[in-house]
Image (cartoon, rainbow over the protein chains, first blue to last red):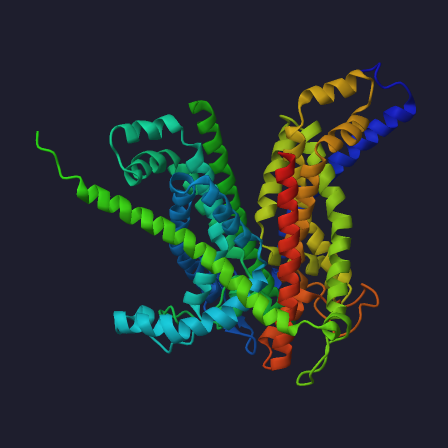
Length: 313
Length: 280
């Protein structure tokens, strides 16, 4: 070691390089801490005034200065739940198609197309959702659902196209490629011998998938679902375009609503009073904490997964 | 022993296979549908005036989004200039100096978490440190928020790509008496060039379509970007503002901007993918 560094200049260059690299690594740490600290600092007005009640209050009134996060949190959870309910089975089916069924010559371009879905910017999904999907939902899908399910409260109200259901659909499409990518890798990781053993016993493709592949990769699939969840929960522009931006908690999926991020995107530049701004920053803080926890859970889960798969071999 | 009939199993199997194929088709149809819509509405909005002039007021035909194109390009470039070196060096630290060390493990973990933080939160953060104290929106703040989104992506790919470089290369450089920084820059970077470039391009593709972080930082402006020290026009916030407006000519312009952004992002993505494949 000592002999390699001949001169002081070289020693200096070496330590500068090491120091720069370390500084940049520290930067990531500092950035994360700073984000949290700044969000807390800038929401202290609202934190002090509303306390924990902020989480459960459905009020949102800039005139009287009364704010609560309940409707935003409700909308975030509902739209994310719809997205995952649609995207998870679809992703499983697509991964099944890509790994087990399709000829590589078909699977490659199809897989590529699905991956491209992830490259399209959020705002483009918003444009498509607002000008194409929403009218389509209003004219065809929602009247159909109302005809079939009658007066179920879930599908009540005027079919406007814009609302929770459309937001959930757009979100589903957006997280689909992420979940599919994870599930596809998991399916491909299942040892071929295990599948072949299944086929050798006369099992059909579906039986092998259900009883061998899925059982083997269940935990990994869950990791993928976590990643999709993290994406869907913080998605902003596409949701803002189609959710209707209305502070209310409605039973109907056709009703307009709001999410944490759509409220921020929509009202932030209008927030004139300090308390209003502070309440919005607190919404951001809530979103940050939620996504942070989801990310940590997903990372730990995937790490445990890879360790397990590594030692299983 | 009596055999159970096999046809219910076969029917189930066929059913599942059909559903899987239909799901894949659904994904492709969705992609095709979105691209077709963007192409149809966007192409009719594009013309020479659209690409070269300032926006027109609502209701007045003509006008363009040249200022927003310049603004988006400027802020993206600046974000790269800030975010790529930091991400690159952080990745070098993780791959070269921090193997098995606790601090590196923490940073690696945080890099992954940071990639999953919603971009709107990053915008909010930059608002609190760069917009609120000075009292006005600025292009600088926009560039910084994009840079914060680029950094973790580049750090992650840099680490992954450097980890792929065989150890023998490091050892032979060190055996020749090259110091660590030399071996990293001249040997490792060169060996991992295609991979590093892919990472940077993917990061750029990701941020050039970002809207949410710019909403609180760069905002938007109907004028030419004179300096970055004020609200700066950009394509994505323009799409948001125009699409939500009731004026048909503004909505038309939003489609044109959507077309430009989509085309740019897809080209970047496809090129970087092709680069990555070439390497293999």
